[in-house]
Length: 450
Image (tube, rainbow, N blue to C red; front, side, top):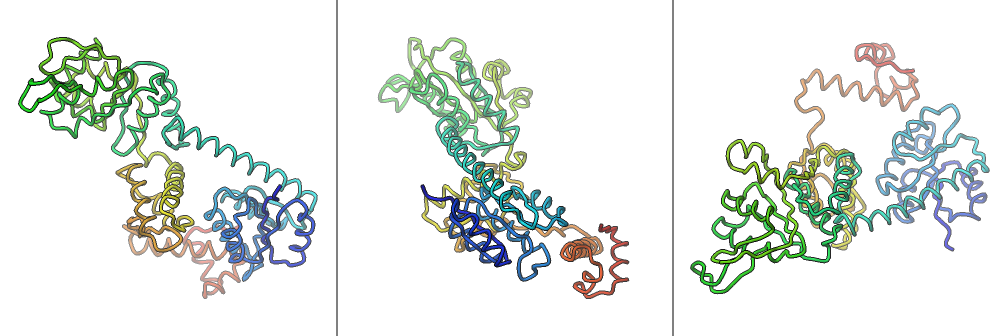
């Protein structure tokens, strides 16, 4: 059985060698001595677990190189488990690293027996997560039409899909354009007892009104000019299966009456026909319109609304789905990188910020389309905001000159103090100002450092 890969990032050659010999029997050891070589090793070897010393060259007495390495490793592969190696007097750095995505930490001097226990637990968790993700991908792909989501809103949607799939009641799916309403309808159909029967779609807003009735209910030969042959409507074609009425809010009033009759009696009249035709089809409908307002305006029948909306599933807009935005972004990136045979490793930090900050008015459909285009057009190995065609706004936009200056000064002072572990003398040297000037700025900007 092939050994699992462990990357040791440590600038102390003696410690690096000691760890290698102690662990080589159990793991395939890869070693790196600084941030650049660590990132190269992650890209080339894709290790499951990394041990990372925070104090790396060119500033081995500081921690910022270690934190940069942590961010780059997790950006390259967020599934990698990183164990931080740090001094006992630097517990706050270890906790900060945990907050930024590290899995665990270990104090120097390294106890090899303790390290072996931590590594065993970490590799076990990595394997479990990988297996679970495989099961989840199959579950999502097989039953929920590839929909992904971990936020509370989407977990409610998934739960509702599974509940309503076992019934034959009509379902009204509501949500903004691009949120995935048709995917919900397909998932309900696929999980239902009708899954081996047709799933038929009508977009009520895309078919001219004079043709929509014929599309839905069918017509007899000679029933109107151009009706050269008998034609079954979409409702009949959905026999035994599911009819999905997208943009139901665009359905003309006369057809709302006919649809209501079908929902009540499960029978259709073809245009020009003289007999009722019994049809067994479940109706799912979707809209991005406010049907209650449409009812108040007389544009949608109240009785049809309540007949269709016995069960309602509401899809949240992408901007309200929190971490799902990056979950979906990475899933779309993987899909289109594979489809297009591109050598793209991920997103730049600025692209991640842009994706998170963008309002996504077109929701999941817009996100997917932007990433698909970015993969095709990108020239580098990482997707940038330019590839996504997202304009990155400055964090100083709409701020006064004074507020922007104060914000920048505050950020630089805090970062410099962090780098120098709170040593004001060293921080003032790095900032090229006197100690009294730095103290004055800290007091002015309400900066306390313990």
